Image (cartoon, rainbow, N blue to C red; front, side):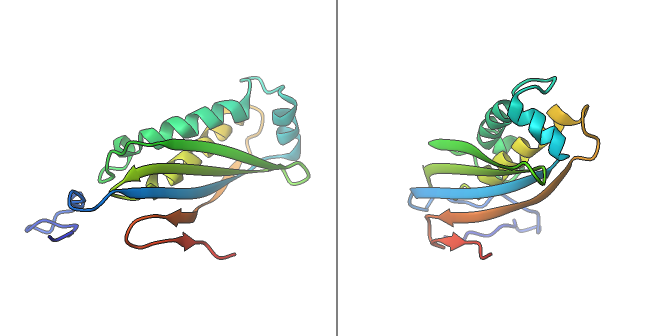
Length: 158
């Protein structure tokens, strides 16, 4: 069986994973949001105008992981078994680090679901704070870890 990414005319197609054996898949991705320290202080204190910034960003990231095939055209629809978002804040620098973890027992990996979750959580922080802080920027979005499937385990260095 061929797992080509292109049809006879050279057009991109969804990879055929129907012959693959399902395995437990896990992916962890990160995104970084840079805010003014006083904006982060308001987020942590729970006094932002739009409400619980990190709570809403958590829900947005989880929901986004389940909607990945609606956003990434050649991504497979997957039965997500776990999706979680964690935050680490650095008050002195105004940095929010977002970590998204996704798990599924599937034929293909969940890297795109984790990356989408981290990205949308970061965008949600931006959206909820943009009225207070015009200087917000979203930094690196990256895959930190993945396991499962034929290619095995990947762990980002550094």
